[in-house]
Image (cartoon, rainbow, N blue to C red):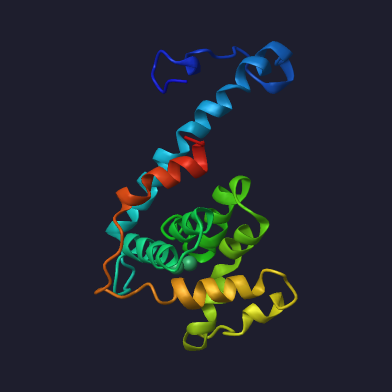
Length: 189
Ligand SMILES: [Fe+2]
Ligand SMILES: [Fe+2]
């Protein structure tokens, strides 16, 4: 499938509301979802790149933090899916700072295990263990997930890879290193 103006997305329905749409319209629209999904990797790469312009007061910018989290996980021997989650876990930081884990969780959900989805979705509350005392929040907020089978996984993610990924001296892999993984995970290519 090609991603060009002459590609399949030149076909369009002519209805003005869903009530008047037909089975033929949907038979034509539905395959185009695959084309839209095939473009997601480029968008995600672009969003990661955008993180470079924002440091938010942290010692490293948000792209470097993301790369460092992924690189640390990769060098510790984590599998591709885990490393992908580590790379994108903060991709919502500049779109929705207060509930940024939900943005990444929604992006990865169709493509990763329940365990990795949980880890991405709840990493904010688990990361809070290291600093929420300083900002008037409950640093033990993660405790409400103690009965989850994914509790220890998320503790490890934050403890080993996320909260440690603010070292300006660390040499992370570049974003280009992860582009094939992003395409493979999101677009199957
Ligand atoms: Fe985060
Ligand atoms: Fe993070």
